[in-house]
Image (cartoon, rainbow, N blue to C red):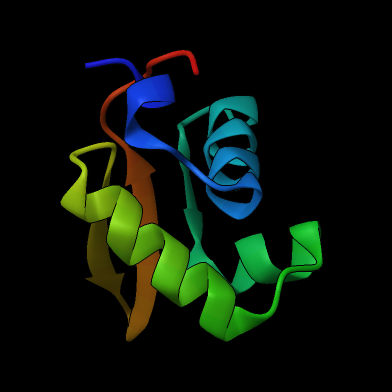
Length: 75
């Protein structure tokens, strides 16, 4: 299924683009929030939805949430 069919909002698209732009395809939620200027709760909610869609994986690293791109689709 394409991400277009997933009806991603602008925050979710921005987060995916941000992860793609990073060499390893991963970033801490706090860095996503700071770098994109998106409120932390919005980032939290967005990455949970992206995880539910199978596009990212969230893991704990030293008590912080690391978001990793696991499926790279165009939208």
